[in-house]
Image 1 (cartoon, one colour):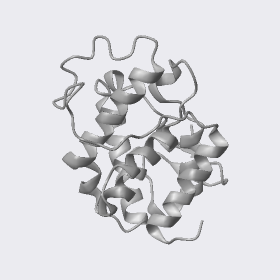
Image 2 (spheres, rainbow, N blue to C red):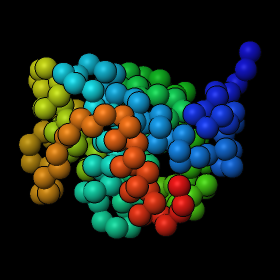
Image 3 (cartoon, rainbow, N blue to C red):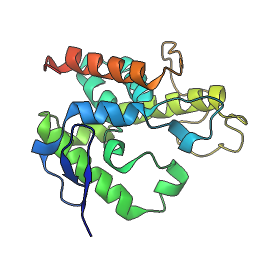
Image 4 (spheres, rainbow, N blue to C red):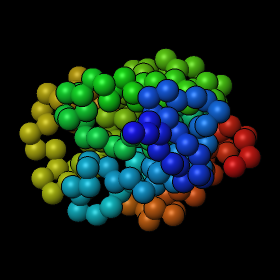
Length: 184
């Protein structure tokens, strides 16, 4: 049995023993742009890449790169809906290990992926996306987060455009380049 997956750029990525040198932003952008939020149970396709781009746009300049990459581990493990993920501690550990490698690869501070401000923006967008794209909205979500469903902050309006994967990928890479000044 093999312990790796083949990435979009052709690399072998070992999800159990990831290394920073195998991390490629093109793999992350491509996979996240082709991954649908909420396990695909939406009225229209909405990618994890677009969610991450929106997250970055609501954070200050210092945290924006963390917002862009906060779900980057899902490029290698896929997006597992939160209620399921919280019952799979091994998946959470694998994702944290991958995020640690991503932080090292791009010279980031791993702990900032878990800061309160980013978590609040992530939840805010999750609620907005659910209200717009889930057939039943946020029905039954009361008490799911310390941030609540309505009064979670004064964030600027972010549109949930439901871009095609190729557009979401391009915007993700463009923002990455703007934030890091790394050539993509």
